[in-house]
Image (cartoon, rainbow, N blue to C red; front, side, top):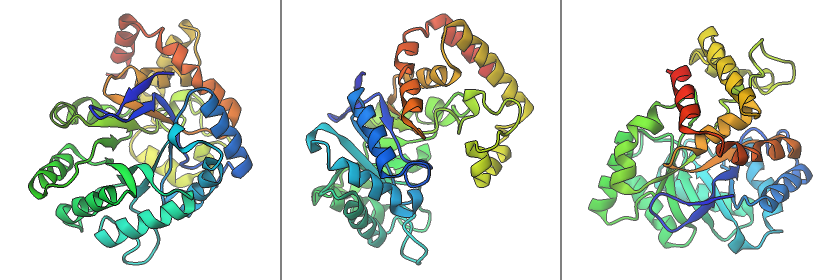
Length: 318
């Protein structure tokens, strides 16, 4: 396992990390989560990611039950604030919700602080100055050590850094975007000035495009699969054209390359994400330990991705 710096900053996190979206509190209870997190740690993963919104807070609660068994200095924990509840002040990036959301997350996680805290989405209803002031307060008061953003545009990140400079606030050091073979534009083009100007790192999610890049949906939606269980997610992917004939054709072609290099398609998709030098960590979502062990083999597959193989993949995806 390689440990990468988060952009230019001193924090080091494992190149593969374990997330909790759609799994903790849904497919994994405390015992299952403990098994997965301990297996992850045993294999070098030191970064665990969650959010106040995941399973309506239950994901944080479950993760908190397990985190007690680790030495705090050995792990890096992140959470994200935006969707905390249904009340008018229970969501968004106002100072009120950012602080109350952070306090509530720390209670569920049973932690004094998190290492990373993200603004889970941009909030057009709140001035960026209010948001960066609140995040600065959270850092300076020891509730979190670093802050970042998730799914913000390049322009929104520029605005955040500008506000931080003008207000003498601590800037964000990391962005958490969706990134995989089928969703590349933002990470590979839009953010390019951000890496160089501000030294921001990336902790990317959905490396398998909700399972599409495993090939499991090449012939339809299997019963009990993630897309069968979460119709809202399926609709979202369909609207983006990710279940269309052209996408499935590309996935099948990628599958042939995986077979050639002796890898599973999921492992190839993960290894491909790891080849991007701007990626600090690729977040895994697993429903059992066997799946985690299979995904960890992407570290071996990464070494097989020569320039020639990467170029072949690039041509398929164009």
